[in-house]
Image (cartoon, rainbow, N blue to C red; front, side, top):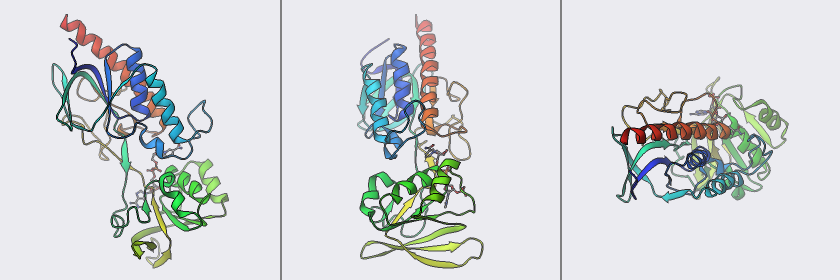
Length: 314
Ligand code: NAP
């Protein structure tokens, strides 16, 4: 049962998870298409440097993303550049609706939609996005050469990005709500050793203030004393985690309290033939290598699922 609109496997999302799934699915000879609404690569393209993808040493995020895409191209991966508007599960097949109205049918769907940066939700954040407020140091750091910036957060992203920004800016304040960083020890050590980085412990950003339509300062609050003060800064980089992009996850699929999709060890959701991988999936470590591993697992499981479906159709 193969026609133009019927696939064995549809992968939604072209980050490391989706691309790895595509490589494994195509090597398993199942008819596969990958649908990506933007430029393939996912969040990794926003990283200046990736140092923990095994066997590659240090590599830029953009180059790593390109390597994933080139590898998938070796197997002639079909990519559709479209937004998926809906995933409708079915007993005989699943249906993927695209924003342009096209409808694709498939045995298996691998959802690899990742996550989006979490917002601070403070006054000024939305109004001055692009005018000093940013969620991507690699994209916007250049505009803050020899300027003062504030980074919000205490995880791996805040640590990596503040180290990157310290190479460009004259001063980097890291505003963290606790007295301990969540970032990995190696990054913490580098941050503490960087003379341009100053960590403001037990501190939150209460508001982002502007002058002449650009960020000029933040209002800070000491979480222990309750005292507030104004800190002059021309940039505010927010790295306080991600929220999973779970809008396409159909009803009937279990998600945890934070919105991450619960799967079994094959990355399969509660609906047979629908898989969730990468940053969308509930798991312990959110790493590029884990997303790639998820892609492998889901694609092998999907190939087996397709084989079973085909044998029932015969
Ligand atoms: P994260 O690990 O969830 O850290 C978020 C940080 O922001 C935490 O320090 C948290 O504070 C703080 N935070 C959360 N909500 C806040 C709020 N409303 N106001 C102020 N601060 C807030 O997020 P992430 O750094 O983006 O990393 C996400 C995942 O990707 C992690 O699993 C991380 O290990 C992984 N990652 C890995 C690498 C790498 O290995 N190279 C690079 C980037 C990300 P608390 O600590 O108090 O909760």
